[in-house]
Length: 276
Image: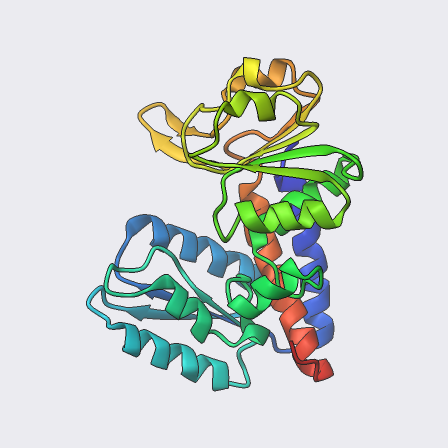
């Protein structure tokens, strides 16, 4: 289940939508000089430019206070030329990520982290949803994976992947189990999953004996090791899985594509005068 072909189709549609809408703006904020974050920001800006989205790159030093970050977010919220605002994680220790997420205008929250958007997702009325879970659902749809009635197991309970993908699967009528670091007998749960989503960042933690034959396995984890980039799922699982995303080239390309799609959605909602 390669993500790149699906991502390219999404990005092509985004480019068509941007051409129809006119000026669409996305602002990113990077606090500090984390090398990986700088790479991620670069990828997002490159993809935005290719789709015709005007990308605004805001950089703050690692010594920036929480109040200073919130003030910058407020300026971008008030900027009519900006449709989407994204704060790149991780943030320095003096800044509470929850405070940054709450400061973003829900209507410009293209990362889906503001409590308003999280609450709408919980209530089954999703508006702007975190990009990685959206990408997973897009991938499942593109490959005609039957979600309705399926046993779905999500390993990981983060606010940007685990919890949102569990809600999206539940809203598509899957029977969903969320597992995490305190789960007893993880294999008892994973071995019955028709759809298994691993999103914990622990290399190779899902092994062959933990997976049901012909299951669909989505590997969200990505860790840089001496051997290169590896996922949460051992590659040998592909021998028994019905379908499985590789690492890299699996979910990753879709995350950026869906971020761009969220930016277009935010632009459409603003032009329609729709409030979240």
